[in-house]
Image (cartoon, rainbow, N blue to C red; front, side, top):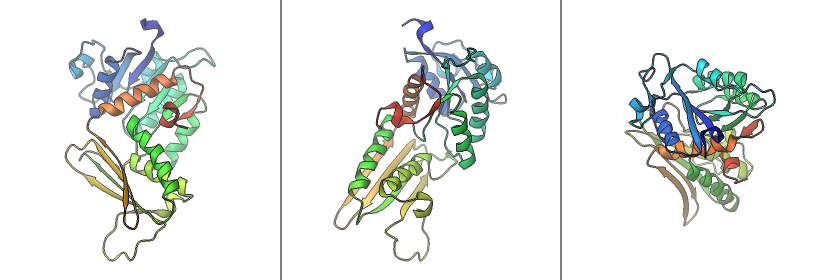
Length: 281
């Protein structure tokens, strides 16, 4: 495959833990080309090369801020499919800023950032009318298979089973419950015909009274370097069904996001998720 036929990928937040993992994944993937990477102007990575961050042979400099990078990747032909994709695992406020630039320059976007409020999600949906976007709370292929399994399990275990969701992440994670845990709750609630906003219980303390059978419980742990553990329990009388996923490396998220980027190559404008990418709909 020659360089001109490859889909160009840019990495946001290149100096972060996930950003460095993405750089490594792209450099080891033959079907895409690393066109650009950037970090915050005040970030320690700005001005360094990709080689200095990853130890891999790549002299590409890390840009300071997204504007110049995304303008250089712009699709200039009106109506044409974007020729490049930005992969973003930063923070909601940064991702929404990058979203506006991708929209202006017609650059496709893979969003792995979590913690968006309703307004942020609405901005993403609006932008997807003009550029193709993959937006998913977890880019892991295994986790997205688990979403499918949870839908099936909830439809079968629809009566007589209490549902509890447990998640654990590293000490640096700033949002809770995780976007993945919330998505698991949404999948289960939808399969059961419930509204997660009404039936979710986020932690228990003191004399809480007997459990409401219609609720879906969430529990969260933060500590050390846990990459990401998620378990959904369907607790019945005399048995318990548990569906779990445990990530041991962020590389699983990086590889999934590259699969999402390749999926966007040539795609029409629209909002997609990993179920679309993996053909699980």
